[in-house]
Amino acid sequence: MCWGVIFILASAFISCRDKRDPGRVYMPDMAYSRAYEAYAPNNLKQEGINYITYPVDGTIKRGDLFAYTLLNDSNGYKMAAGVKDPLPALDSTQMLEAQRLFNINCAICHGANMDAQGPLATSGKVGGIANLKLAQYINEPVGQMYHVVTYGKGNMGSYASQLDKKQRWMVVQYIKSEQTKGSAAAKDSSSSKAPANDSSVTKK
Ligand code: HEC
Image 1 (cartoon, rainbow, N blue to C red):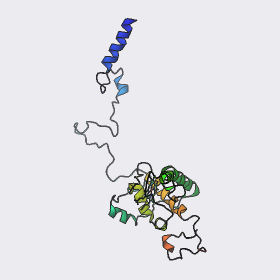
Image 2 (image 1 turned 90 degrees about the horizontal axis):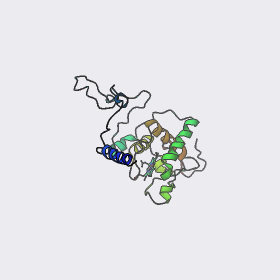
Image 3 (image 1 turned 45 degrees about the vertical axis):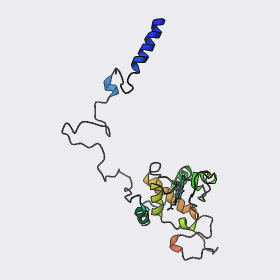
Image 4 (image 1 turned 90 degrees about the vertical axis):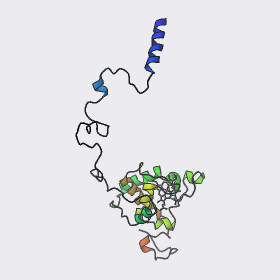
C-alpha cells in the first residue's frame, strides 16, 4: 500500500521532468509517421531532394476564386472601386446563406437591418459603425466593400479568416440587395440622377 503510493509519486515526479519529452513510446511507428507529411518539416533538402511542401506561389486551389491582390492601403482602397464581383447573381438559396453569414458576422455591429443598430453599436462598445443604409454606402462600389471586409477599416476588423473569398462576395451581394429595400430614396449609382425624394421611384 505504502510502496504503491511512493511508486505513484515517484513516477509522477519522474514523468514531469521535461514537458516536451514524450518519454518512452511503446509503438513509435504509430506515434510518428514514417512517411513525410505535407506541410510538416522534413529533411529532404539535406538529402538533396528538391521538394517544396507549400503550394507554388500564385497557384490557386481548384474551384477557388483568384487571389485578391490589392494591398491594404489607401491606394488599394481607391483601386478596389474598380474591382468587379466575380460571382454570378445569387439565387434565393444562396442569398439565404449570405444573409446567415451576414447575421452571424456583421449584424452584431451593423444590425440585421444594416442601420448600425447592432448590439455593439447600441451599447456604445464600438463607435463609428457605418450605417449601411446611408446613400454613401448604397452608392459604394462592391469592390470597395469587398476590400473592407477583406482587410477591415477603422474599428472594423478583417473578415478574411472567418469568410472565404466566395463568402465575402456573397455577403457583399446580400448587403447590396438589402440596402435599398424599404426606402423610396434608395437608388443605385447608375441611376443617381433620379430625384432622391421622388416616391414614385421604385426599386427592382
Ligand atoms: C466590430 C463591429 C463591426 C463588425 C462586426 C463589422 N463591421 Fe463593418 N464597419 C464597422 C465600422 C466601425 C465601420 C466604419 C469604418 C470606418 O470608416 O472607419 C464599418 C464599415 C463597414 C463598411 C463601409 C466600408 C467603407 O468603405 O467605408 C462596410 C461595407 C462594412 N462595414 C461591411 C461589414 C461586413 C460585410 C461585415 C461582416 C462580414 C462587417 N462590416 C462587420 C464595424 C463593424
